[in-house]
Amino acid sequence: MNISFEGIGQWAATFSCTEVREGEMVKVSGNGSVGPCGEGEDFCGQVISMGKGGDACAVQLGGFVTAGYTGSAPVLGWCGLSGDGDGGVKTDAERRKYLVAEVDAVAGTVTFAL
Image 1 (cartoon, rainbow, N blue to C red):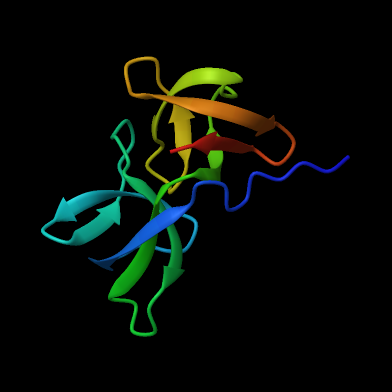
Image 2 (tube, helix red, strand yellow):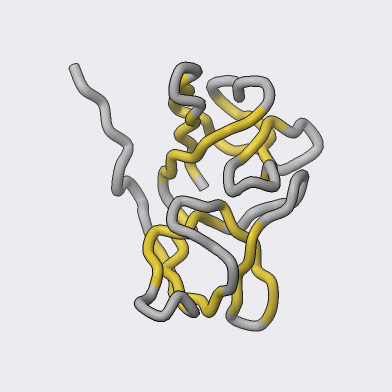
């Protein structure tokens, strides 16, 4: 049986942006703007599409996302996560906890609810 979390509870907003790419975890960097999330920083969501000029992007702020992770694999269930400084996430016991539904150690990805 194939299981998919894609689209469940998804909602997004458009922000102005600089130096971000699709699939990257981002943080609010200014009024109506997002930017790259540094290592150990909290993130607000994941870039799901870029505008033609690269100066605006849609950021998924709710629902399930799949992101790359670095370091030790996140645990299933409630797990603290923060930005890894390279567009993905890392396990971080000091940060907000997210509901982790799936970890793919081979691909280095984690699926969790924002």
